[in-house]
Length: 390
Image 1 (tube, rainbow, N blue to C red):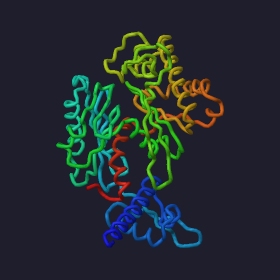
Image 2: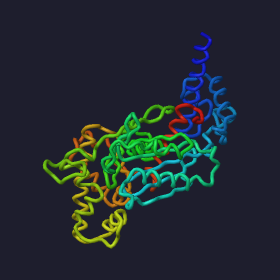
Image 3: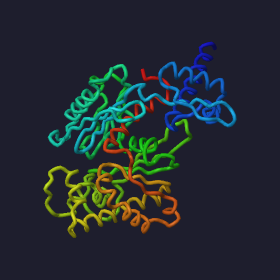
Image 4: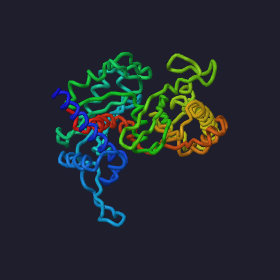
């Protein structure tokens, strides 16, 4: 009986720490009074928990604000220097590893092309370990909270990765990395983690339901749903790139025909142009296409806009999100030039009342966005427990 009471007390304490820490992390600085109102906890409980979080180095005071007729209220915020997290983006053209502080500000990055690896899992794992070592060389190992890895595929409950675009089937990626990583390691789908990051820090912030589309060599999407202020957003993936938009259409890498990815994936867009490029890598070729002014370039981009608009319209008609966020490196390169035309294409293929309720925006997380998304995995664990991972 005593053990049961002690367990219940510990669970309640952990829940309260998680609730208040998450509220400060996701919504920014707040006063004790605001935490009482948002959490429903008593003022005594909030004071006790905040004192513990301050003593543990997670939370700090951050100035004050005037109150109505009373003395100024002290603001509280999560300490960015509480620790560091690493995010790893395993893409189809490169491995990017980012080091971020506790509040996901970028500290450093390392990028490695993977063209010569032939996508061999063992060689990719070596590059991941090399990148983690490179970005963490100047920090105290005790300050590293964890490593998150984003992959363009499914991560099953047994930890095996199935990523057809990497030609991986049942790859035990986590176990390949853990012998060289001395902190908690998390592996998940990169579109899902990017969706989580956009909801926390990017264009999906304050959205009730957002679809985050990841456009690169491959095409994926995550449906991200916001929640109350002291729980994380949830994000689930969908195989948007392999929805068929043309019966008997262009062959797709998945083995089917007419998939959306076969029309708006980076290599498909470049192939549609039909002219040689001076650049040699895919991303530079895309930038060259955007800068081109000839009719062939305009036609290639216009056709891409139409297919992308159809793909987004299908998402809007099925899911009724209040926001669609276009992320990934293709969106970053191509998006600013085509966003108005994409909105127009979506409007033509969407039910009017649904289109009126949906905003279409570009991602806001910068060049390391997928690595940043992966870095949310160890942060999520920190918020869920209210304590440093074991």
